[in-house]
Amino acid sequence: MLAFAKNPTSYNTTLRALATEDEPKQLLIAASNTLVDGEDFGWLWDVDFESMAPKVDRVVVSGTRADELANRLHYAGVPMSKLDVVEDRRAALDEALTRILPGGRLVVLSGYTPLIELRNDMRRRGWTGRYWAV
Picture (tube, rainbow, N blue to C red):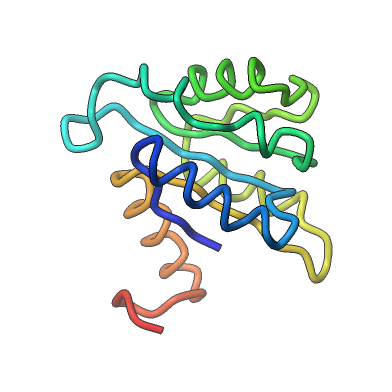
């Protein structure tokens, strides 16, 4: 599942929706601090990661702000033993997928630039079509 999350409201709304399905368990969270994505990441502290922390089996964080994401998740209650920091997005996707059991689901929460890069990688792998269509 690929979800666009770029601010506290979009993260919190997505996390609440996932909680209704007892998710997320396996996560890939990607964020960058490009001009398009926004350079100030102080808003990460306004995201209710605490509500999802007990449900997480594993989290891979990626992007130019991977270290900051890992720090925020640690303070939210996700043990460091459940966190992997992989800055390169393609490698992060590969790492996150190694943890998925048959029938399982990977939840990807991503800002704008990483979302485009991850979706393009998924298209190259043959998982999605060229356009944002169902």
